[in-house]
Amino acid sequence: MKISKEARKISKQLFLDSFVTGRLDEARVRNIARTLIDEKPRKYREILKNYQRLIRLELAKHHALIESAADLDAETRRQLLGTLRARYGDQLMTEFKTSPDLIGGLRIKIGSDVWDSTVHGRLARLESNLATA
Image 1: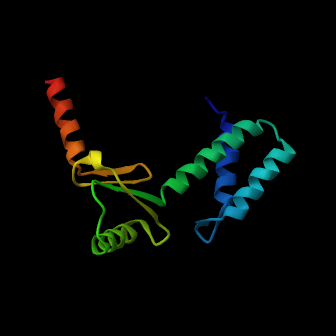
Image 2 (image 1 turned 90 degrees about the horizontal axis):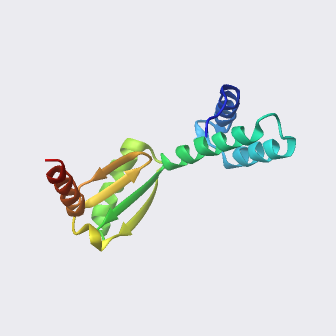
C-alpha cells in the first residue's frame, strides 16, 4: 500500500515522540495510538498503519531469536548473551529455541540481521549454488 508523504511525515514524528530518554515508551505508544483512533485526523488509517510498522521494526531491533539444533549449556548462553548485548545494548531481549532440523550450528536473528551458521543453512546455500550452475 502506498502512503502519502503527509501521512508518512506525521507517523514518523509520532514515532519519534514515542521515545523517552532514547527508549521506546509503551505508555506513550498506547496514548498516541488511542488519540489517533479517537480523533481520526485526515488519513489516520495510513498514519496508524505506518506508525505500527515503525514500532514493530523498532521492537524487532531489540529481540534476538537464537536457534540451535540442541539445547545450549548455561556457559555458552552466557557468553552468547554477553557478546550480543555488547553489540546491541542491554535492553536486548532473547529467546532461545531448539530446532533439531538445523542439524548443527546456530541461527541468530535480531531485527533484519541474520547469522546462519547451521548445517541446514549451508546445505541450502550449496543446493542453491548447484541449481544456478
